[in-house]
Image (tube, rainbow, N blue to C red; front, side, top):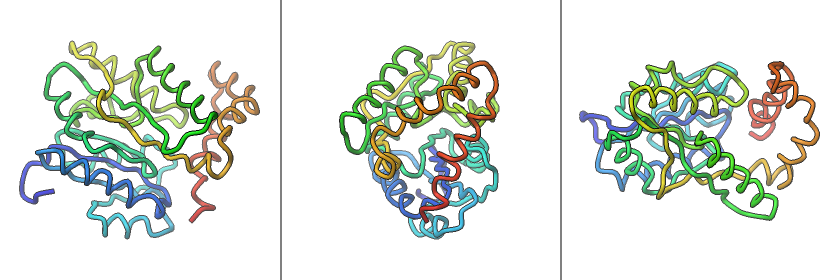
Length: 251
């Protein structure tokens, strides 16, 4: 970022014990910033970190914010609150963006046609099981129009909708719905990037097998059914194990 000048884009990266991944994520943002004519800042929200995430983020040129919440929505919102940029872009610490991401986001926002959006997801490696996961994501996004992955919108838009939906389960879908509804009320569309995409980490699949999510769906069918009818306690516990606690044993 060129100091003393207007910040056009703030990239928010939530991170819980991400010392093995945070630098490559920041590096992907910095590469994308080289293809963007405006100024970019990177904010890493260090969430209950007990490893070297914060130090590595500083060394890579990011600002850091400390957050102790156990809810990814609140972690992202802490980064948005600290942001100085006109446009917010969010990406998870183990993922990467392609080089044209920031320039495409800013162009779409400035067109006046779009309220914000998400990004297509591509895995960093593929197998038959991961190809099926990819197809499920593409079909879901196409049918619902609730694109996620990388979220982007004006900071003023996130402020207007109250930031990311403050729930543990499927906060990305809920937030996409909020952005889509807000956009419709203001004559703007919720969309996805066309030329760029999110490079999605396969680390959980590397650790636990490429059929991981299909096995989880089969094993937790009852939990998912209860959640569909409003009882989210079992789903919240599952998310704690799969996402919030995942890195604690992998420092």
